[in-house]
Length: 321
Image (cartoon, rainbow, N blue to C red; front, side, top):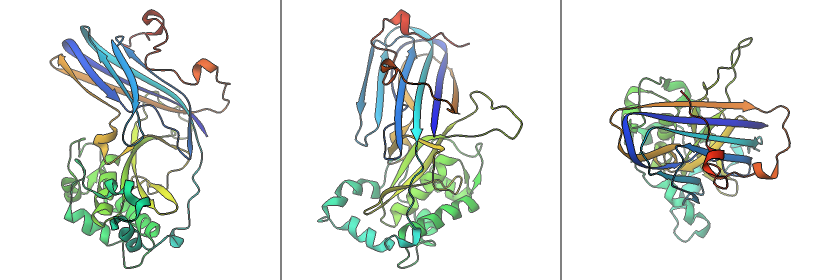
């Protein structure tokens, strides 16, 4: 299934900003079930410095610096991605979870070495006894790992209320466990805290989920949003994605942009700026299914930040009001 994704972030400042440095995780990577056919990030005003690198987790990170006075900043990311349905193993045939924990704890088990970072606490997922105890109810002795993890996913879906007004990006896992409310980021953090508390390797996945309008109604432009879910590692099978917000194994409608220990590693857009005073943030996301894809031209296969090979006058997008 092929999608075109538009993610527009716009800051409007009450006073001019003299300098800003920003990084973005907005370019989808190539994965075993996903191919990024074309991608670009355009910035207005034109950045004085811009470059891209791959971070520790293999994510595509775009960095840019604007060194001129400006009272608004717009970052527009556009991508075309093809997603394949995953081949999910039989949950009951996966190894017992205790055996996987033992392998992860064995320092002489070299194939597991790079995975141990995902068993450790991270800035937004510190050790949480309540999350561990909550997860342990799904992990009976010798239960297959994927079967137990899917049970945990289903319980989070049943026991936690989706409430966008109940949390912020900084709400700790402890508070989410107490109030049993939150959004996709919170549910992913709860699952990760529980799995890591048991000694398993779990990571945070940031991306998008295609949403469809009610029958007979048009899709509202800009009404989609970023999404988050969790991955658990199974020896010989790799990372298996699970979406506790929707109680499902992510399929063709889930598009990955970045992976990390928690949300802090994969924030779609963040940075620092000097000046500005009060500011307003506007985000608009569209995930549109491509039913009749047009052939990609060579220039469209990989376009760098803000059309770096083009002169600024030709590459700048029009400002939105």
